[in-house]
Length: 319
Image (tube, rainbow, N blue to C red; front, side, top):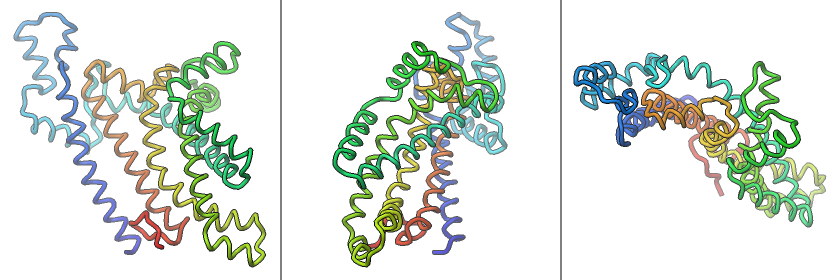
């Protein structure tokens, strides 16, 4: 299967998956108790005329499929509707808040990749006390939820030591880096432990391979053996976790952004769900699904480059 055919097939699959996801995203909010009208009324009684006006404004009396296809048509044209809570276009809300979340996820991803690969490398190659230290460290990391890490880091480094801000996303690139350092570490901690364990296991498995034994018997320097024959073979396994890592980062931003009052789309999603802000919840949910699928497509395209045994469209290596 050549690259163009594979890319076309995967894009078609993504479009079909997004269509199905859009239906689920649109319908899920209507399964929960309450309605936008009840939020807008804030518990106040309303005349039948006022209630009818609200339902007409948000098309709440239209059949479900009519509302869905109207919403889907607007989304295709970049219109996510108007926020019920903030009384402004959802697109504007996302444009204001998305940069903070993307910056936070990017910083956390750098922490995960760097520390996860380094710890996994050390644990598999050094062995002994170093491996034991890595196992203890990663066990602590995996066992610490993001919201717990956020509270601990905030209390120690922001409140007690005063090294970092305790809330907000900052203004400007440098200020954002400073404000988002603690949230990024809190967001990354669990995934650092997970990636380190995956890297360690994959490299240990590669170390037992016949190709490594042959390379050593030919007098290939140990550093080259580890780099070319061990790490590169393990990288395919590590890369397949990329989609899981990014999706976990996007989901956990809700907890971390709330703890640090960052004001990104994670915190916006939490507030919008509470207030039954249908258009905002639907837009953010659909964006998260789309980002997850894009990451998985990138992983599928990169796998054959890092592991020649893997062909396009398959994440399993040949024997």
